[in-house]
Length: 448
Image (cartoon, rainbow, N blue to C red; front, side, top):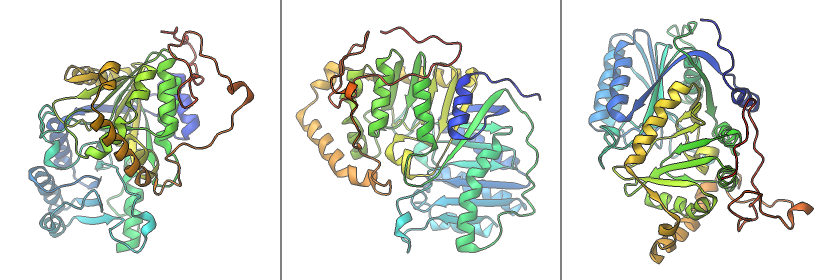
């Protein structure tokens, strides 16, 4: 298949800033909730004839993990090379019986950065990735965990709402690399061996579809990672609409400012988060502490009502989408290893936008008037959760989680509201909208 021309200059901006090229000719299928994700995973495993590589953060023993472990053990017993790497924290709830059955069948199972260890500097640096690669030609990723909570249609409290993707084509190499790095690091430290085996044939990956895909493999090192830079670039180049789906939006200071600036310059910004069903209440309370600043800037905030919202999706201008394992919070953007796909394809983005529309119909919008009259007890809990959680959020991030001192230029000492803006300067001195990078062939939107 011949290479398609660049669809958007935004693609070139992302390549320039991130140093990772897009690959053309990929087939990307959106998998909505566990009812689509788990059958696809099992089908991919069952069809594998040579190798299966799996790296997963969230793994809890139950009915779902029983089906997955049985499928993996069956292929290993049939002579397929099966390598399984579980994050020591995210996979701590897998039962010893499951691990034993995998190993007895011939699966190679390792734990990533075991806890506790003699290296306390890495305790807080986890791999949050979810990757399954079958025969080096078919790959899966997304926010789904291997646990009963993710099973079903996402419309009931015991069935979490999430999004995954199945990928075929050249982008599979990037997803396989997201497995290979942590695997070899763990294998070399604990089990010895070499990165390549006879089953690793690294076949040429031919074009399978029409999607251009950029694969980001964010590291667990102090400082803002590639996912953070990608989100920043997408917000700054947005022209008409940004939609973000995340369990909670616990935004670092710079991202909170950038989201607000994007809305103030006339871009529709819609944020979809969890509603009454949450997994870690304190984390959600920390995120809600920022709601008023977002509402003041004109950001739409929606709370999903049927179950816990666990998706990690961002779409821009109905053209480009970002999907994977990255939450909009400090931990995902600084401390944990992540993997995400940037897909430059309006047809894939249309599917994600359609799912977003369906989710909005099952959500309640947070209004400015309603939020301002929330109970005093709720406000106190937000402040307490924020104060208690701040040290942990920034631990390992070299203090990059909080606001940083900045120089004030002479023209900023007495800022004036932007022409056409609905708001004057914010309480933190960031009332002026940041510059927008105009994509060639587009025209800046008029002020609302």
